[in-house]
Length: 119
View 1: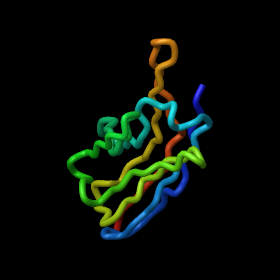
View 2: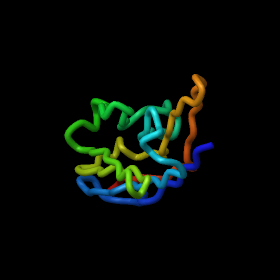
View 3: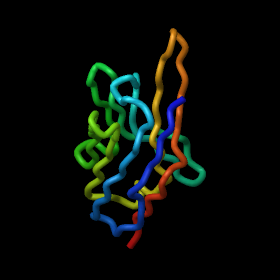
């Protein structure tokens, strides 16, 4: 079982910045895919930024150049630095982990943290 607890959401004006944090209950090096998803009201559940076990990082096109994902193996935490925020970034952001154990994969997700970008 993997538990994830997000923090750092809030309300900012367009152009502002926020940093999301996610505490992971297991060694993040054991996670196959770790990252952030988001869901706005009435919209789909979309990946935002992902770190793969081999170190590959993938960003959603709309956040490239503005968002940065990083991890701290010593603290078992993953972060999402969000700059130049836009109104369309408003959503609940979820920390998400996919891990395979004995050949079986399972997805774990935190409770989410609200990010609101509005003037």
